[in-house]
Length: 205
Ligand SMILES: NC(=O)c1ccc[n+]([C@@H]2O[C@H](COP(=O)([O-])OP(=O)(O)OC[C@H]3O[C@@H](n4cnc5c(N)ncnc54)[C@H](OP(=O)(O)O)[C@@H]3O)[C@@H](O)[C@H]2O)c1
Image 1 (cartoon, rainbow, N blue to C red):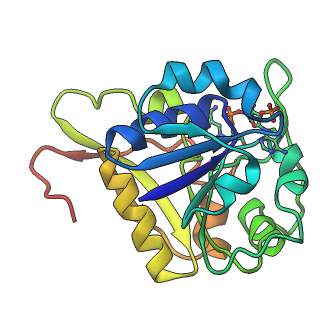
Image 2 (image 1 turned 90 degrees about the vertical axis):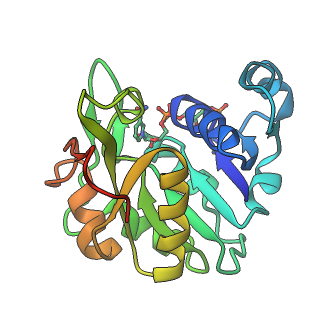
């Protein structure tokens, strides 16, 4: 599948490499343009090309892996998503280490805000509940796969993302809509930082 990735730091690079290893074709983009990504794509290797934001946006699946504070720079109103799948991997930090701060969204949630900023996209929340290093660490002895939560309102879009998650040797668990599941996955939600495994005797569904 052709996949665009917006953001080329830890999340963008890790998902790019792992999805390319699974046979997907990746275009990765940042705000500073192709030249700034030259070394990154060289190190990442085959199956991954640097692109402009517009190149990444053309793909049927686009992964949003930028800082929460840059959301509105990326999800501009002029983008016609045309029903393409937008995977929201963001967390609502307003600052990172050492002074982690979380946005105060009051009665709102991050993935609902993303969905409002990209109204013609099919938004699926995924890849945000664990630090990347933990997400892809080998499972403990006796455990087959690590669970990865997925939430979204469009069943077909969620199914596409579940397949991608499986391709990454993770076990996708759909937990409902953006309003319900997305909120559980958000920082402070009960699924944020929760690590679960499928044991060796359980078949992938
Ligand atoms: N790190 C983790 O373990 C982890 C795990 C789960 C979820 N998350 C979430 O995933 C998102 C990405 O995290 P991260 O750790 O990979 O790095 P990050 O520091 O949040 O994101 C930096 C990347 O976003 C790019 N970027 C910034 N503004 C942009 C724009 N307007 N258009 C396109 N690209 C833009 C940056 O490149 P330029 O500045 O060059 O544009 C850089 O490549 C965050 O929301 C984070 O909370 C992180």
